[in-house]
View 1 (cartoon, helix red, strand yellow):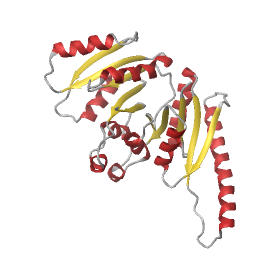
View 2 (cartoon, rainbow, N blue to C red; view 1 turned 90 degrees about the vertical axis):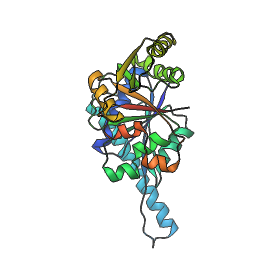
View 3 (spheres, one colour; view 1 turned 180 degrees about the vertical axis):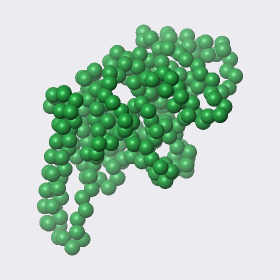
View 4 (cartoon, rainbow, N blue to C red; view 1 turned 120 degrees about the vertical axis):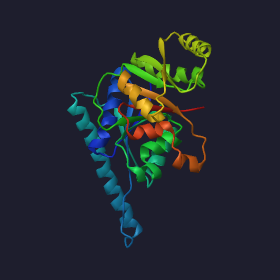
Length: 277
């Protein structure tokens, strides 16, 4: 059974992440854990005993808020299910706390809502982008305008490097959902047709899962993210899958963010990001 860590800050913007996870669990019998990180401010004049009592009282309130928020979300979509977990953790840095908890407890995916970000946030980072760039556990970023619907089609955007390994991960995600898979390769180079034919033949021969192979020329007037967005608009998948590099230095991570992290700021469909091996 797949385990999904679903993050929330109790806001309406975080609710789409819950809706997607609930939908995925309804199709795949996943184990859901709803997770909230918090940081309690205390007065510097309080003694240790008073601080300890206050923090415990606040933690109880926060845990009750999480349980109520999750229960209300289930109620809104007319689903009755009490087979889930609610966990809170105290931390100053939400993204690192999420990463560590997911890795330490063997979660298969982290599910988080994304609501876009301005220029400064793009440089300083958001929880979503930080997770995508640093998490060992695959991240599913859900757009703020997501509406719960059946997950029945997966678009895997690939540079066709290591596609043999990557497609197996995509199929492993799609198969329990009974979802179709389409591999999209955006190209601006005059790649040899014979080479691409070999790739297509290899993909169709992997496992027994039917994978469509689509080659789309790049628009010379667009950046890569714009081309991806146009393809998503045309294909309209339930989920888009990308693989990102994580072995870059600090400067590259801040100023040359991965295409998958960049896309997550303005995502139109849920985005599942694996890191490249």
